[in-house]
Image (tube, rainbow, N blue to C red; front, side, top):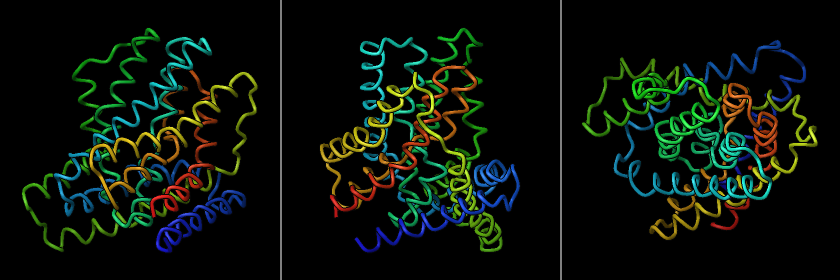
Length: 306
C-alpha cells in the first residue's frame, strides 16, 4: 500500500509542478500543446517499444485485453441506453457521450500510472491496443456514417492505425519480444534517452491543462456530463473488476486491470467531438471531471484490493 501511495504522490507532484508552470506562464501559451506533442510523437513510442520488448507477449494478448474491451464497451452500452431512451439524445450525440464514459486516457496518464503505481509500464498495453486498433476506428466509422461525412474505407482505417506512433512503437516492441531479438546498447541508449522525456512531458502538460478548467458551466449538458462521469469513474472500474475476477485474474493482474479502467476519459476525445460537432461540452467537461475524480477512484481501488 505504501508503494501505491508513493506512486500517486510522484505523479501528483509532477502534475502540481505543471499546474504551477501553467499559472505562472513560464513556458508560454502553447506549452500544453507542445509538451503533449512531444510526449505523443517523440517520447511515448520509444518508451512503449522498450517496455513491450521485454514484456510477456502472451499476457498482453490474453485476459487483460478481454477485460479492457469488455468493461469499456459495457460501460459505453450502459451510458448509451440511458442517453438514448431516457434523455432522448440523437444517435451521434449518444455515441460521443458513450465514448466519454468508456475511453480512457491511456497515453498521457496510463503510462505514468502503470510505471509508478503498478511498477510495470506494459500493463497499459492491452488498453492501448484495444482503443487504438479496435475502438477508435469503429466509433469514428460510426460517427462518419451518422453525421453524413466522408465514410472511411478499409485502407484509410488501416492507414490511420499503422501511422499512429504509439501503435508503431508498440508493434516493434512486441515483435522484438516475440522473436527474442535484442538490439545492441549502442542502438538502445539513444532510445532510452528519448523515452525518458515521455512521462515528465505527459504529466507537466496534464498539470498545465488544469489551469483553466471550468466544468459544468453549460446548464444543458450537465446531466449528460454527470452521467458520463459516473459511468467512467464508478461503473467502468466495477465492470473491469467483475470481468477480471470472472476470467480468473487475481493479485497484481486483477489490480492492474481495475486501475487501468479507473483512468480518466481520454483528452483526445474532445478533438473528435469538435470535428463532428457533437457532444463537445459533454466530452470536454467529462475529461475535466474524471481527471479530478479518477485519482480518488484509483486510491479507493488500491485500498480495496490491497
